Length: 341
Image 1 (cartoon, helix red, strand yellow):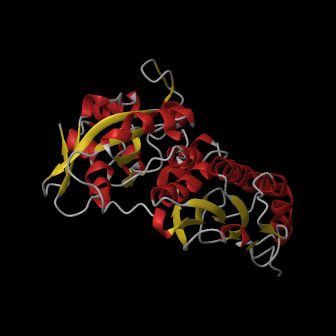
Image 2 (image 1 turned 90 degrees about the vertical axis):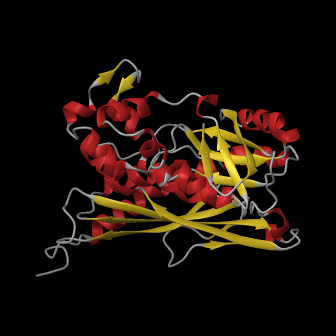
């Protein structure tokens, strides 16, 4: 008896690391110290010395049951983007710049090429966010997980000068809400998605005219990363008063998280285009509208609260960064959290 016969292939682990090194290298930043394979990742903080009060901000998350879609489609190169996005978007939401990221992959059996493909997606997400991938862990769990399955989670650290933290406390009646378009369902609510549609290869390969692609392609579209959009707004000299990352819980749970007491957010549903995947989901699942807005991003992955005088300039800055933005509502006095009209 040996470790390999028990289900853990150490040699496969070594090969996974070798295969992923080229992707990790593409994410490096000048602050990264040392290479991949050490017991920890080292990152110099010399570059933040000029901040008045440098403050670390962090985020950790996974991909959720969207990962089941990757299994069914045998497509593993985008879920890493989702994992990074879920972490770095939270950091950007606080006004922070993501510095580095670490991933954790648990698998039933280590297939080096598959692991490297997953990490390729993680590296792509890090490049989009400007963060360095400085380490991670691949754990083989025979007997705990099926051999052809895995789970993926990650952790990111960023920095912001304390005076630039986005807290929402300065939001007042009359402030404008600007929404940034999502790329689709992102990485939330897939337990419901998997009840709405048959999760079979035939179903996922079905082409829908209204989507312009197959169902599987629409659903697996990776989560949009908003780091560059928020940086573009900041570089334009605009103060973001509040920021909400629209993840699990949709509008009703996430928008109130950025609001101070006594302020209600009013969102105009017809102020921006809702991606067709959501209407297809609503019809197929016979879902109530409130359920949709309480579960999904409905086409807006992030919502900012701004002074009215800055709204048009903020939209222009966001679109300069490659995203699409809309003026979607306003803040008003009230205690209702969110009003959709």
